[in-house]
Image 1 (tube, rainbow, N blue to C red):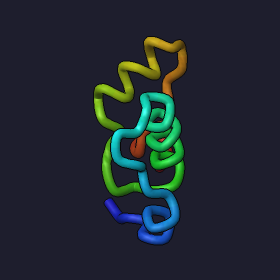
Image 2 (cartoon, rainbow, N blue to C red; image 1 turned 90 degrees about the vertical axis):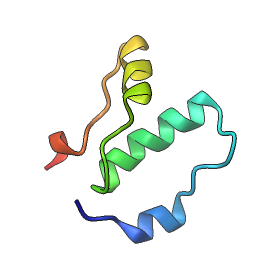
Image 3 (spheres, helix red, strand yellow; image 1 turned 45 degrees about the vertical axis):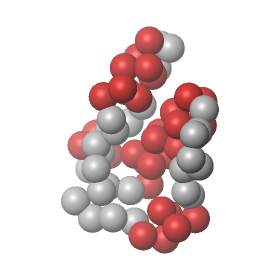
Length: 60
């Protein structure tokens, strides 16, 4: 999987990010970078909220 270095440099996840910030960051990350899968904890939280975000595999 290839990293989108420009995206990562422009979109740093803050330390001690809230759950909302983490969810938003990981959804945007999955849409813009192919370096890794979305963490299971984030995927589970999105599903609990009724939305399944994109995964790296689904975007290929």
